[in-house]
Length: 543
Image (tube, rainbow, N blue to C red):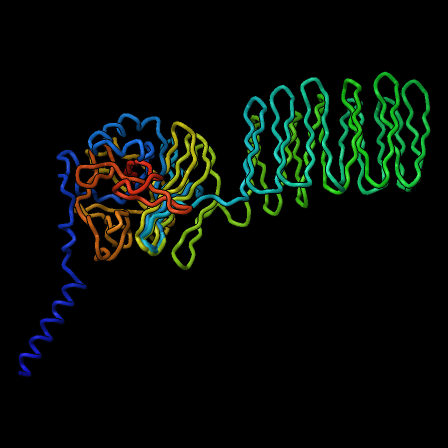
């Protein structure tokens, strides 16, 4: 009886061990569709995946897989592209903000980062990133997401458009005919700069202080600081005007025809702006910081911020750039051709940050010819960060440590948007090679820390941590194990098509589906908020 009990126990232990440490039975978990004869099931180089968004899955719900694949092939050149990174948890994660360099000079590729859990997720951008781009024709475009940032747009004809979002921001708009429109806020300090062409600008600081500057044409301006001080302005015709104020400073505005306009204020400070055509507009402000910049051609630019630091940079060609931020730090970069690039960031930097739970947070803005990577968290999940990117930008999918693959919720322009999938291992760039038959089909990209890096052997995918790429019970693509998690549907049957796309069975079509702030990758269309995608293979090189 004892022997029977011992034998039974041993059998149970053996069964338990077999269940927990299988000999790779998941290699039989393959789709019914056969791998195309032109595809390869073994690819030695370390590679990432680039997510190519094609169209809303809702438009494809009634079509067959073959028709969808055909549509994707046709629509590919003009569709959005996004790249997947891998987080340490194994989830693929597409991130658009980390900057990477592509080997190709024509376009940039952003790898996908992987978090430790293996999940792939794509994180949306934070609220405090603003970008100012100036085009060669002199236009300035400024987009901000934080409340207290003002935007000034200047067009080549000298018009200035100023838009602000904070409550205490003033706006000055100048039209091509030289007129100035000034909107004031409560309690601020106004600053006026004067150029040597004889135009008059009036600078005031705190409550009752007026500032008058003298121009080289002989006009006299009298500066006073006391509460009830009189101001004498002399005009070129020799006439003298004398004016006094009680408890406030009076401001005299002179027009080119010799007429004088006198306006006084109680506590606030008045600002006088004069244009080359002699028109003067007088407006007062109280308690916000206003800045007026005048260029030699008579244009005036006025920008204000609430409790922020403003920076004005002037270039030799007379262009003025004014950058403002609330708490974040702003940077203005100027190129030799006079174009201006303005970027601001909040607390986070343009880096992929990994949190203890394996989630990766990546916040930046992409600029032309830059690449954003996706990090992999320790759980293998892949997360993809979303942002508005310009043409020729590449974003990547990230993988978390749990192995889940998530794709960034990116808003991109119509053509040439690329988001790539990269895998993170030790953080060092990975050198990859090409199989000769795929040499022309697979692009190269610089690898970086947290990029999703994969290998393909005998139809099975593995990430840099040795986890198995699989379609799990909820149809999500992620990396786990080994073995893959319980309920896994497919863990084998992977291949790379002759045109360089990741294929499962006979299908190149996957779906990115919005889940909160992230896109997850699936092999089926599971919801209305899903988009059909293809996963472009990218070889990583050491840059």
